Structure formats: structure tokens, C-alpha cells
Amino acid sequence: MPQRWRLISAHPLARAILQKAASLGLTTPPAEQFTALQGRGAEAVIHGKRFWIGSHRLMEDLGVKDAAFHALATRLEDAGHSLVAISTEEHICGLISVADSVRAVAAEAVRTLKRLGIAMIVMLTGDNQGTAQAVGTLLGVDQVHAELLSADKVTAIEALRHTYGEIAMVGDGVNDAPAMAAATLGIAMGAIGTAAAMETADITLMSDDLTRLAWLVGHARRTLRVIQQNIVCALGLEIAVYRAGGHRVATLWMAIAADMGASLLVMFNGLRLMKQ
Image 1 (cartoon, rainbow, N blue to C red):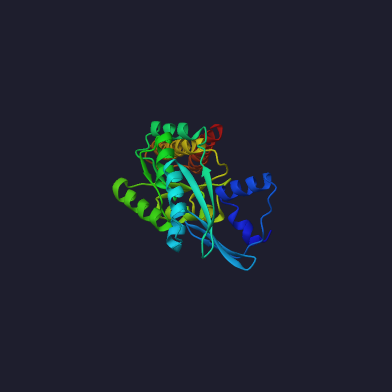
Image 2 (cartoon, helix red, strand yellow):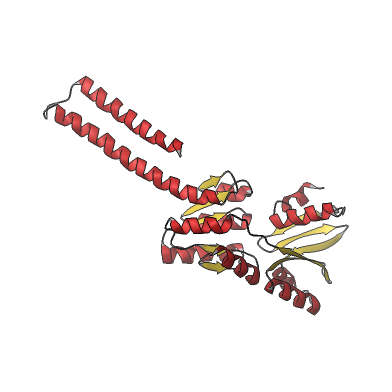
């Protein structure tokens, strides 16, 4: 299998389709001149003929006319399915319906974030409206924005920043990278994330465990408290040494004690974060 074809298999839907094909004993022909169509799908040449693979929206953009396909695609999307269509310039070759399964911990992760005081949790997705709304309702998110291309996600983030101020964007795909850059804070899920997402992110979580998002919020708050404590302790020790000198110039040993004492206090107080 050529390297260019393996690039698309990093997508979760692509991996699922390839795994299903392998379980059925099907072989995938080599693809040449592969080009990713950001947020919509991909195109490539197979056995000298150009094919497109992607969403229902991509087929409409290509102008492929097939009333039966569009009726079936609309019905499946309304039922909450994600669709992957394959076409040539002349006709639709096939349609693959994929039902998204929500992780068992996803809804609890959302509830935990809300308990931590996160004001608004919004889902931005390129998936169809029916699937996105079904998943969003199950997760308990506050808003759902569906059928978004990469530029649409950036526009949505900018609108949210204008309304709420500080915004964190969590993502893992190539299409998420521009929106992560537009957010106040970008967070990449490292285990399943693309290189573009991880390079753009301010923070990369080295797992795809959604519960780590709540841990990250708590850890950031604990870190901020420790920094504030360190500043107070360091300044307090310096003031105490100055006052102990009776408003006179402190001796060399007093200065050393204050400096080293402050350094040790800051270091040991900071090490408490390792226990978390």
C-alpha cells in the first residue's frame, strides 16, 4: 500500500472502514495522485481513473446527480449516521454508513467540566447536522455547530471569543488546527492527534482519555495557587529578613539565608504538585 494512501487511514472513519474491509478479506487497490480535500474528503487515481471519497456535501459540490443516492443519504443522516460516499465523474459508486459510538466516559467528562465551572461547552464538527445533534444531546453539551469546514470552525471560535472572552479549543485533526490557533488555548489529544494539531496546540495530552481534560483544568488551577503562594512566601521571607536587620543593611549571611531559604521554599512547595 503506497505511503500516500496510508495518510488518509489516520482518520478514525478511514481506519474503521479499512478494518472492516480487512475483516471481510477485501483488498484495497493502490491509489495514486492522492489529494486530501480539507474538511470534505479526498480524491485519488485508481487504475487510471479518478475517484472521490467523502461526505454527502462533497458529492453535492461535485455536482453528481443521483436522486436515489441523495434520498438515501438524507434519510441515513437524519437517523444519526455518518456517510462516506465514493464516486467517479459520472456516477456514485457506493455509500458507506458509519454509526458513531460515543465513548462511555464522554458524557461524564462533560459533566465534570461543568462542575468545575466551565461556562459553555460547544461541539464543532464537520459531521452532518442529524448525527451532530444526536451526539450533542447525548453528551449534554450547550451548543452544537455541524457541517463545518476548517474555516467555519475558525469563524465559530472567533464568535465565541467575542462573546465569552477566553476560549479553549480541544481537537485532534488537521481541520481542528486553525481553530486551535484562533482560540486562547489549544489542546491536542496526542494519542490520536495529527502532527498538525499537536504542533499548533499549546498543550498536548499524551492520551485520548477525555477525563484528562477535567484533570488539566484542576491541575492548572492548583499550579496557579502554588505560584501565588511562592510569590507571597519569597517576598515575605525577604521582608522578614529586612525587618530583622532593624532597617539596617542585612549581613551577608542574612542575605544568603533569605535567598536560599526562598529558593528552597519555592522548590519544595512546587514539588507538591507531583503528588497530584
